[in-house]
Length: 139
Image 1 (tube, rainbow, N blue to C red):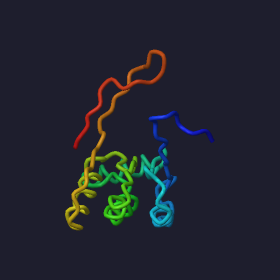
Image 2 (image 1 turned 90 degrees about the vertical axis):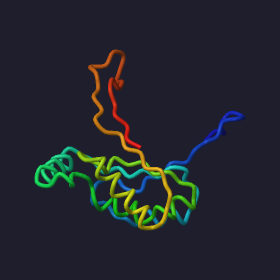
Image 3 (image 1 turned 180 degrees about the vertical axis):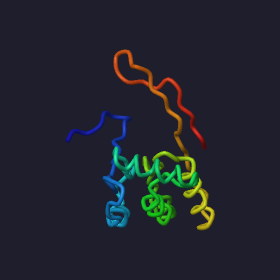
Image 4 (image 1 turned 30 degrees about the horizontal axis):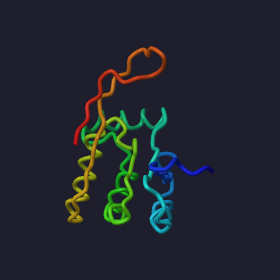
């Protein structure tokens, strides 16, 4: 591995989940290690999206990977103390509800953390590759 150029800083990204229903054991291990700048929780696949869409159709408050959101929510203070940022697609078909659940967890814990949501992205047919034409961001 080479060092970054002077003035640049390398970042460390840790993977805490590779699918919905994955073990939550990685989270305390990553926190104990302390080297990660970003922690990524990957949650979605085609089957998962179908399950989440069906759950959302039954209950508009659902449609996100609740177990991953709960794991993140229960460690918000630890992530903040460690200076780690969390990135996830566990919002599934209802990222706004997932973000609300995280904000509620932060409020309950007495934490002031930023939670951002990207929802409603529509891609174009891509000229020279993929690019986003319209994307709604909720803070």
